[in-house]
Image 1: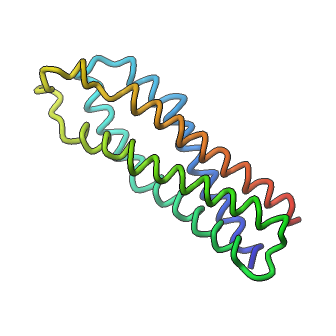
Image 2 (image 1 turned 30 degrees about the vertical axis):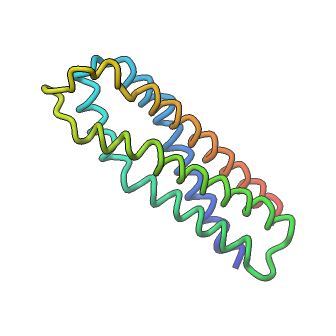
Image 3 (image 1 turned 90 degrees about the horizontal axis):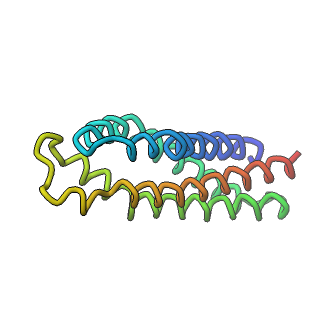
Length: 154
């Protein structure tokens, strides 16, 4: 069963790490460079492209890692990195739900032509970028743990 689940964990964590890397390397710098009235519609556009794709990838990887970790017959050498990957993915999901998603929802509720008068003070871009870097690091670490598990399973 490990041979069936582990590829799904690798694919899910790889796609999640890749998507978050795109946001970290391209999306966040782009959003930070835009004037506020252009930032809001671009952020709204990007969010609709990543949801529900990113949650599906992370949840698939988390569930297959967790299942592989508790599956009878999984070698200890494989069990440890997939369990670590599951914990790392859970961390990335928690950061997403507690930090990034509320910002996404708030920005999604804004009208670009009528931003709050104190928008410069409450601008969430740097905070969003910083939390995105945290969840990206967690997802990349999970991918590396899954790659290690796959190598050990050979």
